[in-house]
Amino acid sequence: MESDPSAIRVGQPFGRYELLVPIARGGMSRVWAARLRGTRGFQKVVALKTLLPDGPGRETLEQMLLDEARNAAAIQHPNVAQYLDLGEHDGLLFLVMEWIDGEPVGSLIKRSRLYGGIPIEIGVEIVVQAARGLHAAHELRDANGMPLGLVHCDVSPQNVMLTSSGVVKLIDFGIARATNRAAPPDDGLVRGKLSFMAPEQILTGVVDARTDVFSLGLVLYLLTTGKHPFAAANPTETMRRIRDAASLPPPSVYHSEFPDALENVVLRALRHDPNERFANAEELMTALSEAVPRRAEPPEMAAFVQHISGAELAARRAAIADALKLVESFDHPLSERSPSSQQLAASFPPYSIAPPSQRTADVESPPSSTVPATVMSTRAEPEVLPRRGRGRVLGAMALGVTAAFLVLAVRQWTTLASGAPAPNVAAASAGPEGLGAPGRAPPADAARAEPGREVPPEAEAPAPASSAATKPCTPCGPNGECCEERKPAKKAPARRRSKSKRRPEVNTVQRYGI
Figure: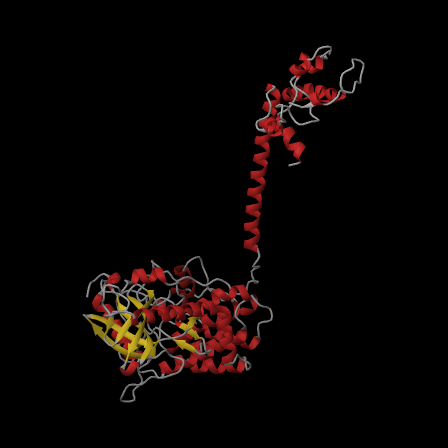
């Protein structure tokens, strides 16, 4: 196989599987939606995780993938994602898991900010189901009946999925450890999501079931309050607060009506000393069931997921359906018509499936995961952005109209000052003899050319073109001038005087009321 990940194509076979849609890419692996093909037209959509062909520390990553398959495949519980197969294709290991039609809790938290946050009944039920799955992992035994002491070590909102049918699934046992079989790694690296680690996981690396209880307690705190209790500017500083036992604000600080019994459960799960926490996930689950007897049922959970992320779920289903049709149209899985993964990524919408967790993270270089923001804010007004858009358009139109008026006014003023007729005005109003329309005063030199008439001094100023020569003159005034001539003759000097006192643009703006 080529080492370039972009060389992997839609429809490419991985053993019994064909790749469909690229879902996510992390530091060590890529996740695809894939198709399992059987005889007589049988097919099933699965999730297929492959190591990156050119990833660093290849041997270590392969061992981690093998450990994940070995440990998680033995867990048989409805609240844990099922691991179906482990294979190798052209020297590249891949892991096959059940396809989960749902959303990570982290994505639900972010989207629910527009809807007032996640209701307590739903948040507690999510943690109760996750605790059931964790307890099944903690109680896992080998073929001889000996406990493995399996610890997830990476419980976080991105590794807890809520399906479209209202069932919670734990995923990503990539750094899980069977503590009764292996010593803690001695490589100086902290594994997991920095913002959701337990203090002992940071300080010593020694973990047990209570480590997962602390991480799940952080998820519970975030779901029910919308806040991370140790939140800081970055995940590394958040981790330091957890490690140094920074003061833990009770949930009632953020919500005065927070149930007292639930608050006691949350605070006990987050004790800095592991001996003061719940001994295992089952104790946490029991305490939550007693503190909040009325929790959400699966139909309510399913309706919540559809309400919050229905559009994302529909887009992902449509993308997989399109990919299945595309693969069916191939003459051969590796034909030249098969698009590359880069081309497909540009064709399909983005997906909200969480990328694989950060497997190995240096304490001084935090991973890209961040502490989720509060989810209890008020619902955003949907009209805010459209109003801003209309305001910008109306402002631009007003500026354009103002500029047009100013240009026309300057041109008209220039015409009046020079004595020439305004462009297109005289031509548009000219009659058969070339004169203007009736009702306008004639030009000043035309008035002087008429015999027997005296032109007053005021008429020497340029006047607008007119067609008053075709209309009988009605004498008025001491000099016998026409009434039609008196008004424009008196206005012309006023315009000339205004030119020296104030700018014509200001006068134009005032006249038009802009």
